[in-house]
Length: 443
Image (cartoon, rainbow, N blue to C red; front, side):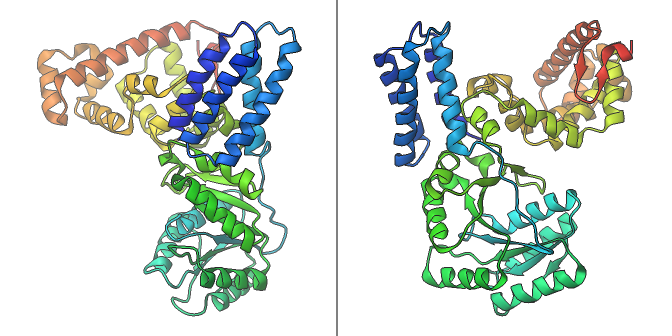
């Protein structure tokens, strides 16, 4: 996510931080580079122009300040303006009715049905009872897709197969009232192109059911096309927010940077993976930090808290302190990390981890799978005592998992280095990890 634009900003900031003072020339030179970075990332031209102008004007004011590190001051101006551009604060769903109605709108292929399931799953986890309504009667298998997504999320779906979408929505809402559901999510039809017929239909549904939230679902990978579509829907419907989908595959980030400024409507969620839990709240501060290459440690901790079992984590912490963890423990940790999302996505949230660093680490989801295969090909004794794995054992393991002996050597070397590092950590009495207590608790 944001790989291209982040790499450009990291390069710009490396130059800026070295500035001894702020001058008209370096302000203009840096502004020109920022404009290029934004336009190359498919940011709306007007948005990029306005952003750069604001940064220039505020940077001019820094010349009269006696800052110790003027370059850092410039970086802070860019960071603050990026947060402002993205919306400054988290915008939550306004669900005040009983049942509250969420209407999803957008073009075909943007991911409305998948987003409906992800949103239902998120609301269910927050303690709300949800009913999804299959109102897309035009796209082949759309109803069946929503039913399948509903089963995965364990959320019921109201469907009639075919019929009038408006009537289906009305009866679905009545069904939710009878079941005393907290929230109804209306999955409406999309089209391949913007057209009057589609707009008329969704306007009639909106007017009839008076939804609490009208969320435009936009494909983040389409860049400026997503922004233009959002603007068209904004003119036809009283949108309350946006869901940007497929952001795990978008390296440019133009839609995320542009869409709020163009429509005036907040981005409320972003789709970060194909998994059911791959829908994150859009936090302008965190997203701005990720775009600018500052990382997002808070999100990593939150993801870890969701998937790591507390007792298991404490047991692992104890093994780290005692330096007794083995390859089975290593595999367990890899499996837990996989639940948090793709490895590249997690590593990209770490401050200072640019694309070049990611390539050097060679840590992607395939590599994790191969590592698991290698460990699975070892005997229990070998996993508990890796030091006994000699040449003949390595050859047998290689044949068993289909990976080269060189890869097995690399894994064992990596594991050995990690044990040395953990041994040093174990001597740090006050070392503490989130939710796991102190090392001293186990010494």
